[in-house]
Length: 309
Image 1: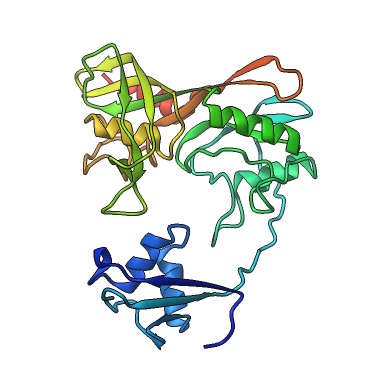
Image 2: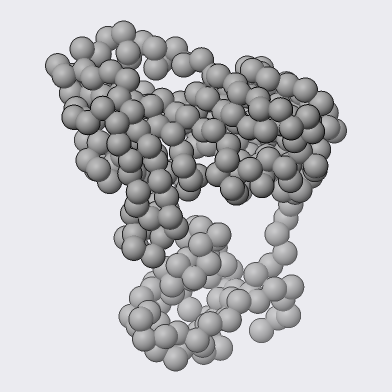
């Protein structure tokens, strides 16, 4: 085998007996997609007991897996003059009301038209560099189809301060959502650990070994004729897809959620889940004053509220 900059080695344990090798590696290294792993296999970078194998190869206990990981090509991320709805800005932070269908930061195969491209144009070189060249200024993110408040840090000091607040769950993060079904209680708490779904590694799920997650919800309006409920959700923790997973877990997935709606369909076209990050409150990293921003509901959300009965 040729020398490689990096190498992954693994001795197969009994729990993985009979699993496809591409699925095995994707479970062991969840930062790599199945597509990327298959490419490495096709490029003859994956070996089982010193022999090249196909993606469909099934492993046995004690098999010795070696995968050569070539150096990653880091693309150039360029600023783009994309209009931004800025709801707060000073010398240290910017809060942007992100629109639907905009990815927060570049990733493999998607290096343009992201919030990062737009914020690089707006802020020039005034962005924190802690998260690297792919995510300048980014300290947290929301999903592509979720709208609303995202805080951007202009320097490393503000990044560290805001990151600590996110870690401590001290940032006030309030979302508005429309979910399937009529919720009877006026408010409630969903406390259920969240982790990767054992059935689908691309999805999150309520799992016993997951990370602690808590969401408080409050009813804003019920639509009994159409069978929907308009709610406010306050994050007590900030796990990936937390509100979407928690509401689905209690039988009230979000309208338009193509991942966690459990097959429910709606006559309304929403281009993804009806979820909006409305309120963002934080301690300013320099002045130490409490700052709270409010992102107005997007037009599609307002139209839904007007037609639902």
